[in-house]
Length: 115
Length: 115
DNA sequence: TTATCGTGCAACCAACGGTTGCGTTAGTGG
DNA sequence: CCACTAACGCAACCGTTGGTTGCACGATAA
Image 1 (cartoon, rainbow over the protein chains, first blue to last red):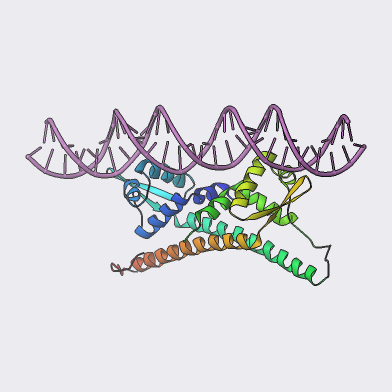
Image 2: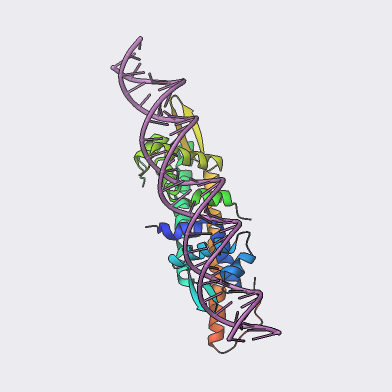
């Protein structure tokens, strides 16, 4: 149901920043990204490898540069998963809230469905 | 702007599963959770420590048990942050899509603002 | 009191994010 | 053509973290 690979790819704060930068600048290289981040080029390169492996970016080698760009479709998919998890938890929180209110009113509601 | 502690707490797949279970069962102990997860009690205990540290759960020691429950407010805050990041990326993706369409129509739009 | 259940603490291991150092390749200029 | 520089990849190393096993300790049940 949940693609843990996508999640953990997006779970790292540095990788989120990288996606932000790639989106803002319309692409970039390991070197260009490392200049805007508090980590070395090598660290950025490893992260780009991770992002590439899960399809969130794709690379175009041109001369001595390797330009990376965000894959819009895949990122949209990741966003959808974030929203999905958020929606699930939101729903459960609201259900719990309703039950709590019902109990407050003295109606103990022992037969609630759960799952 | 983004609370990285909350993010990374929720970023771990096992911790997400734990939150799911705690929400579904209305609370639980390290032992009860470990029975429904593919990890040992000690691993669960460590995760509960992390979740407790960022305020996503709170504990009630009763006898020889330590019962954990989800903190609804804090989880709601985490959900809000997920949505916020999702919304940001969504907006950028749509902006890029619009620009791409504009270029397709031959209107090169070199003066678009970015950031 | 003795046995058992739930915890906590400590040591250890593998994976990961990060760094430094070095070798390689593609452009650039004398 | 040859030297130099820029961007890159690879490898070794370190600290943190998710996970395990083993053990000792307090609370309950027999």
